[in-house]
Image (cartoon, rainbow, N blue to C red; front, side):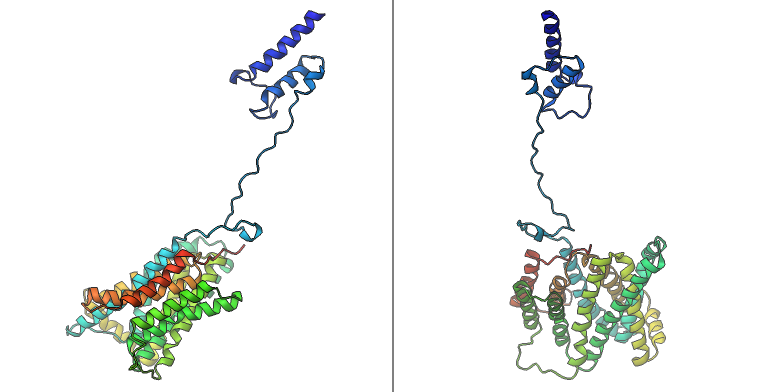
Length: 402
């Protein structure tokens, strides 16, 4: 009897030791981890071999292991307010996309100036009125994006839910875009200098900052500092502190620029962060509307738009006006606005407006490089770039709505 019990105890010890090897794992699944597998094997095989329950074997049954709490990972949809730990916001690479937009839009001015100067020396070339030029610019940019937009529409599951919201918001943004450009055209036509138009346009950052502060019911020190730096820098750049600068009645239509352009950033930011439109489809929707409104302005106040358009293309595709149109419509409008629309899905509208105040700085630098103009606005450039640097160091987030 004693030998029989000793044999069963020896088998139990054998299975306990063999459970350490891969070839002798316990055939009973779900019985613990590699840390407590020997103890589990001993208890299971004891029951399988009908080994008497010795008091010492009862202590061998494993207790549940206490696992460490895994590190918490905050996703985009989780708020850091639910934890005592506050992490610094990571750098958003889409801020660089807004910088690219500022470069593309700033280069519009020297490119168009070079084209119109060359067209004046060529008898075969024709410079269209500004309203007609804006109409051609936006209709050509819409046509460039249309082939990429059609597949997006065909993939839509519901016209009412997927297409119509893009059409409606595109109408609002297109109207605001056209309002800003028409105000610029009217103000410059009234005799206001281009430097004044650039400075007034830069006030869009003030409009966006105030509207966002009213909506959030707070104005941070960072927002106030970056806005003040940007506006002061543009004022120095455009010579607004010169005592000889006078403000005429043409400044009234120029004020349409900061109001309407500022509204476009807010509308696009809300639409992209909350409804996640296709950037190409949304851009095409707004550009086509802007082209229609600019065409209506040209038809009402500039005469025969069709005749002006035909004269532009009569000069040939190599004419300065066509080359300026191609740059303004492809790089300066369709590609850059689509990039801006996509970036505003995560970049806040206020940070976008601050960075885009570098547009007149790029225009001045481009004029020095392309047109041979002088550039001595280094302190103004430091202020403008400093305003943008604040957004890069501590940019606002534009979280996606749950």
